[in-house]
Amino acid sequence: MASSTEQHDPQEVTIRSGRVRLEGHLGIPFSPLGVVVFAHGSGSGRFSPRNNFVARYLQQGRVATLLLDLLTPDEAEDRRKVFDIDLLADRVLVAKGWLGQGDRTKGLGIGYFGASTGAGAALQAAARDPSSVHAIVSRGGRPDLAEAHLPSVTAPTLLIVGGDDEPVIEMNRAAYRLLACPKRLVIVPGASHLFEEPGTLEQVAEHALDWFQQHVHPAAHGSTGAQTKEPLR
Image (cartoon, rainbow, N blue to C red; front, side, top):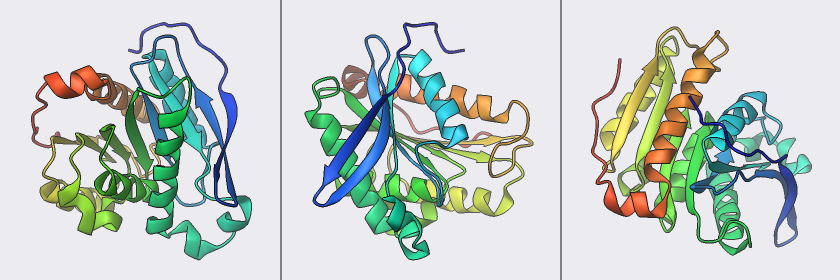
């Protein structure tokens, strides 16, 4: 379970990239170990109830979180942009750069939490610019959307898939084979793609917190010697 720590209400933030303004929520617990950027799935954003649940859980375990709309409201209406993994990865990198310059977040190790199509964007971003990226977690992810980039990912990567999400299980098994970084594949029994079944999202949050606590702190990244683990079934 997550430890009990001092909590603060998330702060509304705006990240500017050229003419684009991206809205987000930054939650920073007391003495954070690192900070995690959430890359949401198609049609989702910073108000995603599932990602907010996971974010609160991470904050209780001393991991800061940034839930960000990777698309502007106008862009989100364009289905081509919703599935434009290159664009979404660009925006993840914008968020990473912003965190690296923030008074409260610079110097923190960075992690990515990607859901569905957002996992493809997070993995591509991590491959394109691995600096300061210490851990990745994918929930019901589509890592196949970043297939060409997977062998270049260096950050320890945890793939979490629902046991009843058969097509996505196979996509993640294929991605697992392509990843050359420290890695783990966890299949949550009885869970569908959205982890709506009782207790399943809690399992996602627990696995994610454990992974980020192990890897996202810069000192831990350099000293733990994380090992590849075989998939859990």
